[in-house]
Image (cartoon, rainbow, N blue to C red; front, side, top):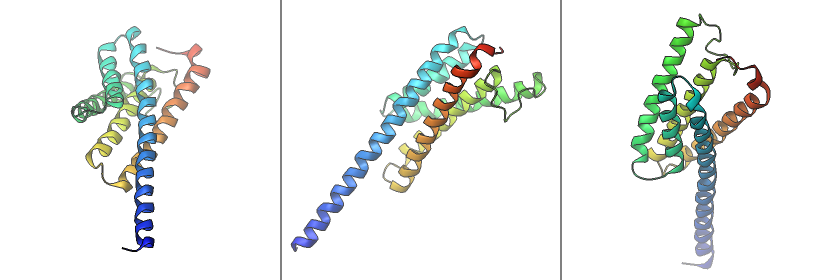
Length: 174
């Protein structure tokens, strides 16, 4: 093997290792940020009348984002199912009892049903992205898309939370 071929192989190998390390750091940072957001959301549930639905959802989502072990995939599937069921519960509750006051597309964070809808939606998307990532760890194209999705999810989650705490909290409706 000549020196040029060896140099090209080493450069390609180094580039792949750098991409893997970069992917891990972006994905890891996004997971930790979402874990913190879900832990914060779980801690706010104790003054909620139906905390027994929401606390386990946010606690499981936090656990899945923080821990990367074999059982994580099973826990992520459970959290995904819980999030989907609670999302449907909130949408039905909004349509049935509130006569569509807040509406399915509303982002009026003063309304409890909107906050619950957004929270369960964040869990659904987070668990879906983590399951995609764990299902095909060697697919670099999918991993790049998952990283991008995680970054967008962090931006949306923190953006909505920040806007809620800065602008809507004093006028909250329960």
